[in-house]
Image (cartoon, rainbow, N blue to C red; front, side):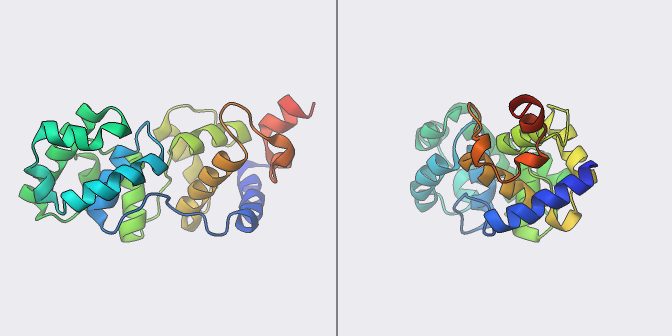
Length: 213
């Protein structure tokens, strides 16, 4: 079975298992999504959502973040980890949004990834959630599962993104990634995948070559 056919079968199963898979970050504006995605680097979405509730009550616009006292902002986001670098990037990112874009989030990959702290994962998520532009969102779950299943042999997120683009139907790019996140959290866990409870194990290289041999 080639990789495209494998993805077709997996999508059919995932549609039944995770019909409501979606972004698990809480946000009420494009700016909040952009910032929360930056905060989610090396941090769980659940923890980001807790921090974000107070953060967005305090800072309501890009201008507010741009004008923030850096030490105070660091403390506000400290529970998400790597808070000094994140605070610096968020403040500078928002300054650029104010000065160059009149606080509007750019609608293309090039301008988004030129913003401090914004990589392709963040850009793809924002482009899909805000503008409906399809994108492959390679987070830790998508990286781990796409390798275990056998959809890619790459470890570099950008290369994984391009590999998945070739085998996943474009209109399902973001759906597939959100479903991988759900499956990674519930079944295909990092330390010990629960292969006996996996609905796609017959299509998974890890199961067929390492578990069921």
